[in-house]
Image (cartoon, rainbow, N blue to C red; front, side, top):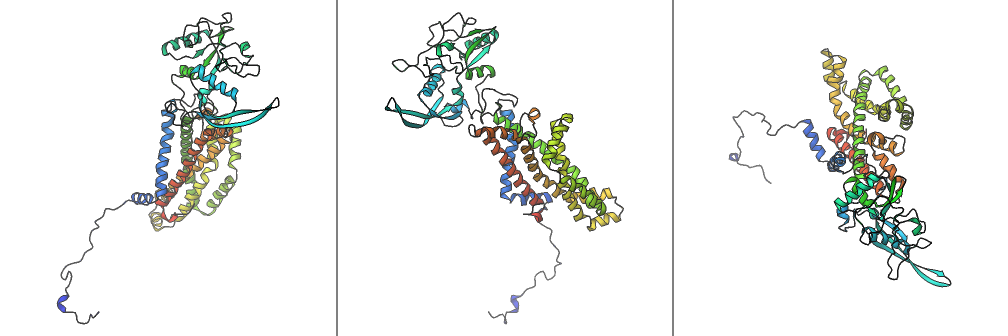
Length: 507
């Protein structure tokens, strides 16, 4: 293009006679914290982890309140039982129905389940999940036999249990039955009438010498309820089963008490005022896992926060002295830290539990084990921050104006490094939770008497029954895994937001 002959009238001066000044900023200033939060929100994984973490924290403090059970309530019968909610189980959705799979159930077993359903009205069998056909030789002939894999409601499958009751409780249960219409006590069966079987109170029907049910011509079970008034307990004046001609006895007199056959599901309602309902099932102690995870997580979080606060305080003072004074002070204190850091944490915890716990208690001795060496990392971080800032001009200016060592350390240097120190605590907390869980899982520390249970204890109990009751370890594992991952993602995001120069760098 030709720029040599541009007419002069096309040129004009801009602001020819005006005084030029800088314009005032039109945007609002942002604080350091607001700027850090903008950077934090850009880290999507940390934001998602934060929301999950908030949910887990809310669960830890709300779940024990929402649960109908206390962590101190332990049912010795419903042990390692699958998740069960009666209202949902009745809808047949295939979830929360207390289901367990029983394999290789033969005809005798099928009659056993049939007997429970017929007597109590609570059918244990949810469905048949597999049928197996085998051919065996019987007197030289091939006979086909079938076995079944059944999905069974564990709570209904429990059926009838023997219970020895005082006369007062026997009377109280009858009165409760009359008020509610719920039958707890069922007709008594003498062991001599069922081939001497004493460990299977659900057998109320005739059996042969091998314990197999004997049926009538129509395939019905034959009742063997006792009408022997000579062994009967006090008079029974409550609900009777429909087939009772009025002669069945409902209790066996036994040394100042009575032995009865009770339907445990209804007996549980009598004792607790509600049906059994365990959203996450029960553990080896008969505790509600839904409540147990909340109680254990609450203890772990509070314990980790306490440990972090103590270690932050000790580490801040120790690292401040190292970084500020340097020289022989730094060298001496650093050697002390090196010696302490070489002591294995497991050894310290074990020794404290064996000796110190007897004097001060389990929790204080466990706390001492964490504090003994836990502050070393925080001291090293504080030391680095002091070395970073103590040579800056504003520190030299303050020293020139006569500021004391204490003022320089905690009024000028420490506040400038507090961001990195505080955000590192978010990464310390999951480490404390992991160590606490490991110690309780291994059984080195038992906090059950203090806290009721811990995540580590739940994992240990679930590990023992992982093949038969996988729910007992599944739910605590999911909770712990999410808690650890989210805490680490949250801590990393917080560190990068407050100090962008450390992005992707592990302290």
